[in-house]
Length: 317
Ligand SMILES: NC(=O)c1ccc[n+]([C@@H]2O[C@H](COP(=O)([O-])OP(=O)(O)OC[C@H]3O[C@@H](n4cnc5c(N)ncnc54)[C@H](O)[C@@H]3O)[C@@H](O)[C@H]2O)c1
Image (cartoon, rainbow, N blue to C red):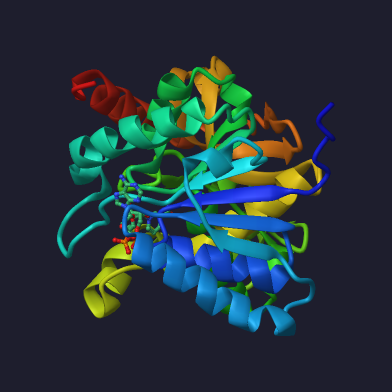
């Protein structure tokens, strides 16, 4: 008789800038008990495992960390994929589709061959398209395939609004939804600062101006381009967002985070993975949270979903 495994294992595939930062965040926050790192570049995965193990004595608890292979995915609770090409200066996320689809077909089939029966968390771009591909390639239920979606964009949004209104980002409730990319949108109609709607803040206090809010959103949407221009890639923010999603799943939190979820009629869209608020727990996505959008937001969301569906239709599978 085999003993039931009672430790949480995360398998990370792709230990590049994003993957290594995620591994670092997992260890520092003691989110998983086991972390196995897999990469085409075995030396990189091996080097990362060694390096992380040397810091383990300083971590809140000793996450068992090693460099491994696809067989180790069998007992994983979460397989996180951050492997593949990233944006070069001037490239959009959607420019990466064909390159990364081919990589994903081989990665996901190798994971499934191991006997994996857990939850996929996808971060590689274009994340909404590759999450859909992971769902298709794996054959797992839609609830158990999750993309990082607009978690990072919402994090950027909350940070910049926090700076503007001079409150901690945790006291800002505001979401970016839609494609993690150029067609994403801010849900201004439900954005609040400590429970006060932002529209009311603008009316009440003359120092706050709606033009400034437009600029904040533009900076959120274009943040990746700005960072890539300056240092070649973005990774800390997304890695911390992925760690947050991992914690929500492994700790069975029922936390609401903006992730790429499969829509089956919600928000008037279907057969697409796209960034929306969703309740996350040990089962994956418990349900999508449907916020009532105003007319302009709904139009923007419809456009974003159409762009993604178009990419899915044109992609060579
Ligand atoms: N979702 C988000 O918000 C977000 C944010 C930042 C970056 N990203 C995306 O994350 C991805 C990774 O970015 P990065 O900066 O870490 O790139 P990187 O080039 O630093 O790392 C990619 C890693 O993937 C590995 N790899 C490539 N093909 C593989 C395969 N078939 N099997 C296993 N490993 C393989 C490479 O060896 C490399 O270590 C990119 O697609 C990037 O656009 C997403």
